[in-house]
Image 1 (cartoon, rainbow, N blue to C red):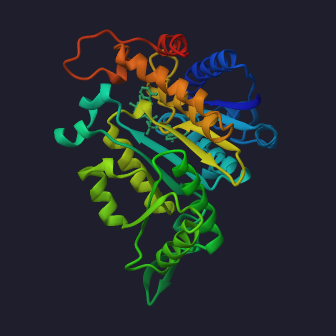
Image 2: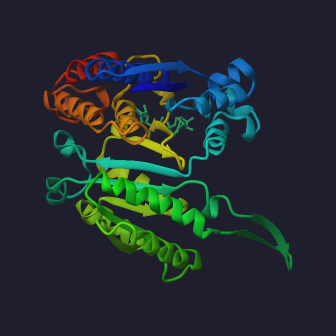
Length: 363
Ligand code: NAD
């Protein structure tokens, strides 16, 4: 297969971690007989420095002409970076919102997997960690409360603020279809999370998800209220496979799910549109505090590349090969500094060395 990938290294540690993910992709392509062509474009702070704006039409056009996009991370230190003296629509993060909108990315996938080797980093009870977990939050990304009409007004001399939570059945249907499709590549269980005991939008959500489920008889569907889901994630996360939910609930639950893995440098993510196109990036930020020191953990970005192979190119074997190489690297005791837990006396490796260790284990 010929893969045309646009890379947005971005800011902070972005360029360092994306370099390692590219090496991994090139090695997989070499072993499995594919060709991979990559092109770097600017976005975020790097684009502000070069062009005065966080996202240019050229970057959008380059992304649209690619099969998939691999991103590092965007943004700087809000307290010290001159980027944050600009108006909000000119700051680095505006580039991120702009590219998601331009590419129609409505489905955000964030897996949370507890590596057996990193169980001691899990903040949950011992008996919960021992069971492990492997779940994926499927969050609707372009609708709901964050995109509904909002206003603040004076009523009878008091300030009153209003936000509106709107979902159409089409918006719900397309994300539900993604969730069921992804569940078919995993353990075939979708837990749809809503607040159907209170919200009309949630009642419509539940009804449409049930309609979609009829076309997926091989996938089990469960419903769960969001407050219960927040509790269940810390009580027994092993019960979940794909957690399907709307924008704001997904925002909160996906952060909770990443927290229980205990390792921010390990978590990949994908944002997809209706086709197989996707933008893949680590869940963490640009870590300006450690940028340029060759100590960042590249694993989240490398695992994002694995998600790209799985979801944009349907290359299951190749995605598995990357995930296995990461697992083997951890099993062999190789750790970047962020993965060294208190009391562990082993020496950490840098970003480049971690990349090399993973590349050397791809088979
Ligand atoms: P962050 O995730 O960048 O960093 C939080 C802490 O985790 C820091 O101590 C950092 O050193 C560490 N860390 C993060 N990734 C790591 C890695 N791969 N290896 C080792 N350590 C790692 O969060 P923050 O400090 O709140 O944000 C920094 C910047 O990133 C901000 O400008 C923020 O807006 C931006 N951000 C961007 C994205 C994105 O591009 N999608 C997401 C979140 C935050």
